[in-house]
Length: 134
Image (tube, rainbow, N blue to C red; front, side):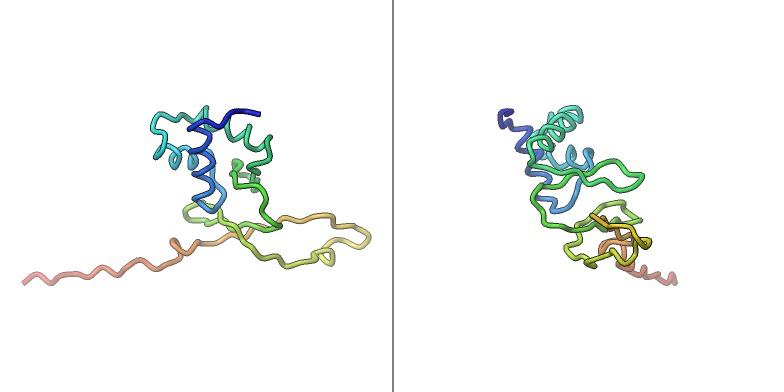
């Protein structure tokens, strides 16, 4: 078991406070608020160790780098914003998807990712008012 360092605590806290899966770079950016000298190699090393210890779990989306979230979540899915690329947890599930499988196939698990625009990116931009020049 590895000792609990300031760096490791900052990494764990960054993920917990984000309340969504984070890319390693996002972890670094957030954790540097507490540990300014933190580097990306240390982030990767600690992410790997925290996954091995069962504290974090990777979130793997097709064609994307792994993101990381706290372990222990119940079964859930994800939403990826096509505008800002952030990923969010979706704590809902359509349930039994076995009817979608070809006849004779046995569905043992599923993973669902929704794509669109997050709340921040979907909001319409404020209208610009133009001043009339006299």
